[in-house]
Length: 187
Image (cartoon, rainbow, N blue to C red; front, side, top):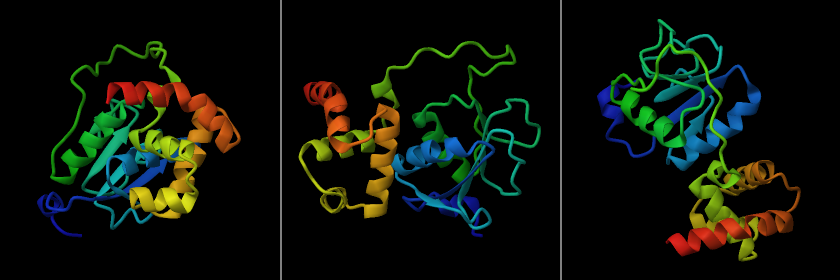
């Protein structure tokens, strides 16, 4: 593997995700993809590894730990509730050899998470894909529009369905119309 500072010269990093909770893998993958990076299963050759939950700390020079804030092995630790922006920034930071810890992280224990509106759970790419669905584009058309693979389009659509609690494209569009209208007004 090349030295850590050399990774900063690459726009897209390869990120491996390991988690003790398989249901978090697609969410974390969506965050990594929306941050403009690639997903790899090859932990040894990844530029950065995200270790989520109670998974054993990987033997890798650039690890972002999501979970136990008291992990003595981890040089970069975020809470499991870290925002996509925090995770994206942490990926960039550890890729160049920096350590990441939240300023507000303290040993005060856990408190109730603030209630989040469902539309805030959608990534920017998922919102774009939702808009493309509303335009009536096929998976192939969406892939061409955003210059991504059809597999990635399917991933985003499945994620949209899960987050919106729907089973079809038309249901996703109907449930997402208020969000799309609000987004167009803000732009």
